[in-house]
Image (cartoon, rainbow, N blue to C red; front, side, top):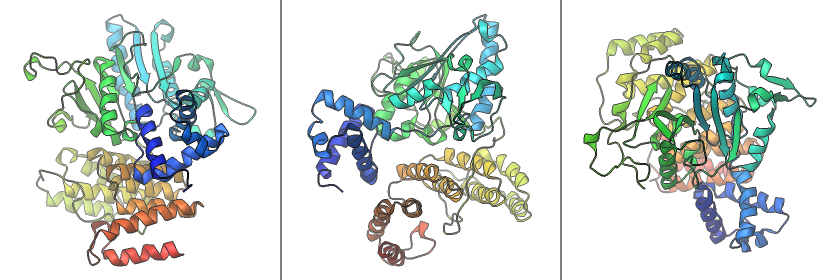
Length: 510
């Protein structure tokens, strides 16, 4: 670490970022923060010490934050990311909404893609609408896309993408919407590009859509893979503003990893297969005092005592997504990994039938069997899902494996292990940045989760970043030092803490 970036300086920059963006860098991500700060100072062509000394200058701070935001908010996205969600939009949610609007003779739609990054998400929605609406010229479509990252917005407005943005199969024909560029990239057609209005927005400063056509009038808001990076207070505040920008009956869509961050008396969570929606509702008057607790003008949201009561059973099959597999050095079998307060009875005949399907490699039949038990979740069901995931991954059916992993994540978004499993297969395929993202989500759920630190260190080691690898190995040793040497931690495969620590220290010495 540079002498200029001592603990006090890091705390100061961390506080500035939190105050202006809501993004929380904890102690475990200090190395990432240091890298971002150094990069920003390099871009500004000023010494690090000079940069730190000028943070109290509002004019300089504005320029510094604009560049720093570029480094800390580079999002991972591609067209039709999360195929099961876009299939649900294509086959159910949007057709139902379109049908109602036709019946009412009100041909309009209001959709907001918050934190749109480089634009693949809103353009995916635009293409989907054009596919669904043969009379689209007669419709008043308001499709807003916002992001805090100025550079990402510029890329989105330019509408030129590398082949990497098309790495998942599209769910509709899209060939006519793109044309090749001389440098072997693809440019989106103006008919799609002009459907989207891009705007810069800081979600913690101006989340409510007062500058839109009508506040509290949106049909759908997508805000995915964003809330998890905010502090708990900031994410709660952002959710409040997002909900207030919806009409009654409108939907907020977050990632499965973030559903635990959305709650309130004015919303209910709906569950369709592996797709989760939060619908804004008009709360029953008898649930509230005379004071309007769900009003968007109140500072705090009242919370549901048990959000699971509003879960609806799955209506659709899981759709194919991305791959992952468990590496040989990590084991997931055994133990109750989720904190279930009520454990339902287990049908031994179904357990035996599942084991037979797995033994005979009849994985789709095994999947159908446990899909029927979705409303009867218990530790056995969790174990079976993990076995199914490993089976699909072992067969190379990675899309199905990841579909089930996301379903497992959705059961308990604060359980670190499913994120670890997802990261393992991404690692195996060489998708290291994606694997690291999943592992960071694991640490967000439990910052002292030993296997995640070891997995991150392993990725950094083999991708030529030994300093970062060492940092996470040292964190792993620190975690083990708080454990009695003969204690066998659940996640260390029966290896006592002291022996595990010795093994890691050998890696550090090597």
